[in-house]
Length: 454
Image (cartoon, rainbow, N blue to C red):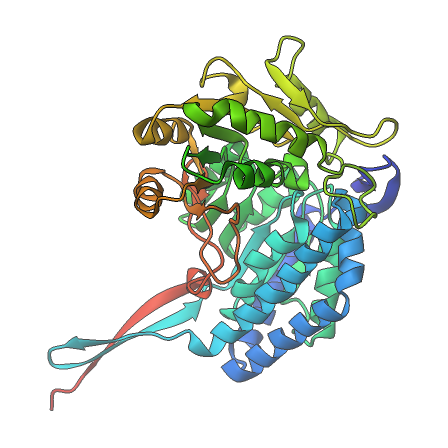
């Protein structure tokens, strides 16, 4: 049997059974996509833009339905899920606007005219994760389609429902049959078949660093383009001159959003020693008051973990001898619940301080000065995101330059805006998604020289 069960993380009940795609079906899908892509690339830019705007409008029309699917399959609080569906809509709308602005260059040269052209790659595979199934899928699908490519989307086994619905909306929007297909199934089967298929020109993968490395090696063997958005262990740096009350109040959302299942989670909290005790006094009630419960309740701020296996992973970092400073609460009974947990390890090398836990657990460490803060912030193999809190603009600039991460916020925990680039340093990934250059990442640059010699 190749079927996969979709389980509601809040109730542990099966909500759907989805058939997995076979390698033979992947091959058929790639061939259909290749034919559809040729048709799509020949469509006038303005008409392609109108089709993607129609797609975005249909997402907007079905916003609540898509959000409810995220609640059902991923356990996201409904407020978060509505934002996620809206983000997918916005990414398609933004990508549509780039189609008629995908400009080449005219480069001054001797003896003629030199221009560059952006041409689509062909068929692109997008392998999406379970933590933000809908928006992260859209980050790859929308610009790839806008640049004239066909897209094969492989959703995570745990969360295929929103992707399947998205593909149906694409057909309703008038996209050519076969241009955007969803191929559910196991990564080792479907993902591997896509990565190894000779007609897939690029792979976009979001997930763990270990799997990303394997995909990168497979793509290297075929000289295949790849974009990787991988793990993170992001710092939240709080200086003594910051508004400590504001910084403490904002902290729970920075590592508890999506129950900590976020590569941008600020789970490595660094606090200047002179305000460490005051910050901890303020943080405890803020964490304990973070509302955990039914994902369908609009007041809920944190839901369950995705699975029993993920809960066991989180538990493995918080043993009986763990340096727990305090915990929040979590429902009992059915569901993959785990309480918000704050640790204060004696060493910055503690496993929970340097490894990505992907759960509602954060560590708090003291630092002495700017140099010490930057050293601690960079003392992991990751470099995806981070925040720093200070009233000193000069310090904000210096520390932002010193922290090796792709996305930083000052006096904020924002990481993702669809009109700005997103991606990581070090083992957090390769390449950038979103922003004004998103479409160009799905194109070949062709240089053309036209002689003007008589």
